[in-house]
Length: 121
Image 1 (cartoon, rainbow, N blue to C red):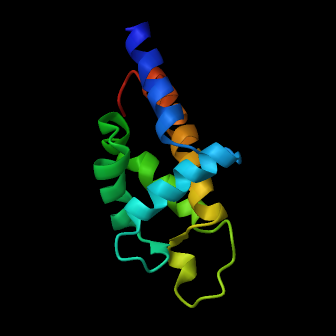
Image 2 (image 1 turned 30 degrees about the vertical axis):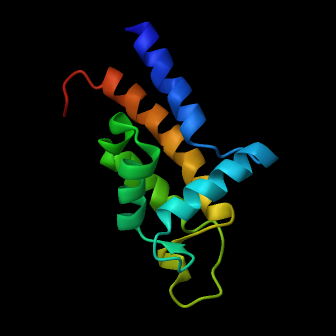
Image 3 (image 1 turned 90 degrees about the vertical axis):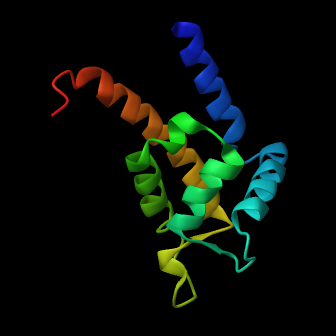
């Protein structure tokens, strides 16, 4: 079981490039292009959900909807938008990078909580 968990954490690290390095920025740019299929410069929660399934392809993370929803919600407020609709969506800059970071972080919280929540209440 430990090896399986190690593989999941490694895959999360590889598929969620949130660090501010040239290599990870290049990876984020590719991911962004695949997520933003209509090319409008904004990602809705539905687009992120679809991108997680079709682009990132981490079923264990895709199934953790509370993680996705919380990461999206907090990331979309990281930068004050100049657009009238921008605060409801993720933009390519810092917000997208933070969303990828929060996906990893909130998934860790999700796993830890599920370990201690023995009563499933």
